[in-house]
Length: 373
Ligand SMILES: NC(=O)C1=CN([C@@H]2O[C@H](COP(=O)(O)OP(=O)(O)OC[C@H]3O[C@@H](n4cnc5c(N)ncnc54)[C@H](OP(=O)(O)O)[C@@H]3O)[C@@H](O)[C@H]2O)C=CC1
Ligand SMILES: CC(C)CCC[C@@H](C)[C@H]1CC[C@H]2C3=C(CC[C@]12C)[C@@]1(C)CCC(=O)C[C@@H]1CC3
Image (cartoon, rainbow, N blue to C red; front, side):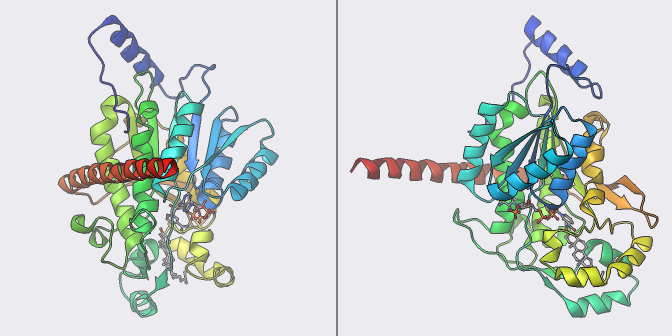
């Protein structure tokens, strides 16, 4: 079970705990003998890898953990990071966020390795078999909505989802549920009385309320599972803040803008993106959301690393933006979220968590019995 966060009790020990927590909440205040621990999911490429590079530039003393599903790619990312930060401490963790068993095993490993988690970046994400609606694109191009279309891809993209080996929709399992389960498993570290911890979701401007239905949170019946999963992460972040802030856990969401990564090369081939680079720089003048490089896309993730959690707005999505002249900055924008629906989503995720845990226990028991006979 995910460990529950301990509320303080009215004794001397609790007073000293809450005092040390308030002290540790001062910006950048942590005792030098306590190395900050940062875990990044999907850290081996794109925005996740650029974030790791930026974090090490900010604080070379970090204990950085790359949580990846492919250990060869993770090893390559680690070597690349160590080339520019020779003395950095970069750990690897095998984690397939789309697999319940892998999340449970990885969480055990994290609890064995670390006594604290300062930042957990929930960045891994997929958009399988994307299709661009060409007709909608040309229609949008000559409409008044054109800037919004380039910024959010609203109505432009569909994907083909499938059911994974846990019986869950793959996009939901990877982009949302695996990360939720990871947080639940790591609660004993994330909700410690002595310090604050942060979880930061890489969401998207493509997160749309219209793509999400609370009756179908896994998006079994639609064609926009990516948009639905990202909207669900926005809602979950708000619910997490409501339930966990008192226990020292703070959640935020960011949008990296449109970034050239493996994910976007899955939408259109890389040679096409290369051909239209001048057009994209032109579009950037009108919508600062065309951040284009992973470094720029990681701007808001990096910015949040430097902020005091209490100063952040739980209803805001923090956008990485790049101006026409190439200047990077972070801007909060209000999310379109209903408190009730976010609360219902939270309880539905807890229910699903107990169902999948039940299945894991059943399978383990059955395996044990089989091995005896
Ligand atoms: N690029 C863009 O324009 C935008 C991206 N985003 C979001 O940014 C995040 C990072 O994507 P981006 O850098 O663009 O794309 P990449 O494909 O480069 O990065 C995605 C990362 O997630 C990892 N990943 C995917 N599935 C799993 C899994 N089951 N378990 C563990 N890791 C997994 C990938 O690992 P592997 O190498 O093994 O596939 C990879 O490291 C995603 O959440 C994406 O939705 C949001 C808005 C815009
Ligand atoms: C001339 C070109 C710029 C034409 C490109 C058209 C579309 C392929 C793109 C326009 C807006 C883009 C976009 C995304 C993908 C590619 C576009 C649809 C994302 C959905 C990628 C992943 C995200 O999370 C958000 C992006 C929003 C914008």
